[in-house]
Image 1 (cartoon, rainbow, N blue to C red):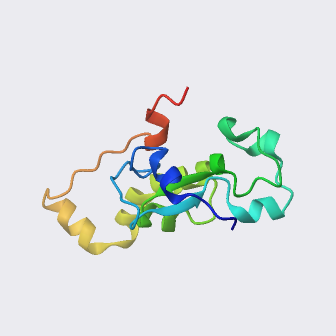
Image 2: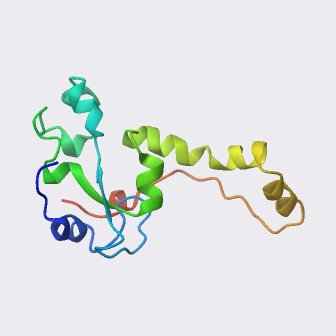
Length: 131
């Protein structure tokens, strides 16, 4: 990766994870490629598949500051090589997966210790007025 200004990335969302909104500092921040790096090597079609706010990038802009978001460790690990929409879908699957695969979760739910609140997944950066 080209040399990046980590503080500039963190400041993009005032010290918050671009995805969940958790407050993070420079030491805890991980830099996420919004469009995953491997897609640039596969001749990713920017005009068809890139988020609207990144359509100005081209195949040589993998490490462009616009494609780099601050992320907490949890979000960065979960997003991994997913696109934004794939990541959104992964998050949305959590309740189903917990019910299907986690007996501790089902047990706590049975006793009213957990209340599920399915909702549309909106990333923190989407709640901001980015102009």
